[in-house]
Image (cartoon, rainbow over all chains, first blue to last red; front, side):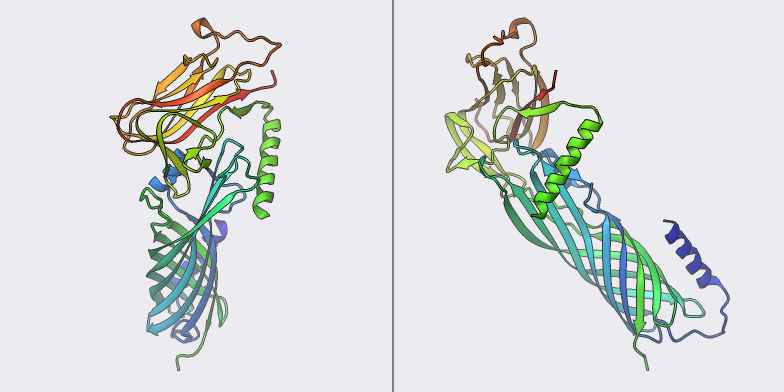
Length: 227
Length: 180
């Protein structure tokens, strides 16, 4: 958190500080229309009727060694008009693991992973130098949840039977962020927001709240020329 | 392969934690297939259908099964080794119409008279309930054990007497064991 705080302060100072030169640096978003971002962060999907049903059926959430709050994001950005760009953004949304005692040991498990890929619109404002910007973005697109249920179907089974399923749904994402250029082509960003994604779904027609809040920080690269 | 390694690591961690915490107690499941997952065709492999009709049904997952008790009366039973524990933990996950009356019973000495029984609550959705069943500690429920012979097996039963839909997703009966 300290790193995030420091980055926030540095960028905030950059946004409000008087410009060293009186005109914007075209080397940033206005001048380089293509962008690439790779972010890592943390997220938290809320519990829901879906997860409570798993607990009703004897499952316990496993958090040790699962890194289930870990989030990763990859973004390709293309400036469309001044102060507005379109993005193609891919995220992992959620990974969870639940385990249950089958009567022969704590050996049944239910695991799911959800990913989202979406088209986002991003509106931004830069500071006077053009090297820092703050932005808001909104996006939507498909999500896919892959579930794996490992269970025993025979007392003499030495191994498990695995049932794998893929479920498609949609997501809506809203993010606020800041970005600062460290050099002509490389920058850093910090953003956070909320993802609405009701996946996966169970046989009882209950949908998981698979998105939730997330915070991402990472590196950005800019290239190309408007001219 | 990775799954097996992970499970082994988790078990070793659990054992280490138990030893670290000084707890040498454990839990023994008294009935096989508490989740009604083991089906031999149209019947349960581990539970005997003593009376009536049963049907395999899906619960929260297409392949996590429960047993539907069709009509009435229905009686499912399973013998179990009593062991030496005094207290059993009974856990149930069920979805039962108000018209259906379903009981879970434990007959510790297999004399046909249950020492412990509970009527399972009706509900629109699946619900989980658990009880501690003390049946052989004192008073009229006392059972004298001959230390030189194995105790007779007990019987766990699920009995439905009323019409209405009843799905039993899980009946787990476990007993704490310890080194004392």
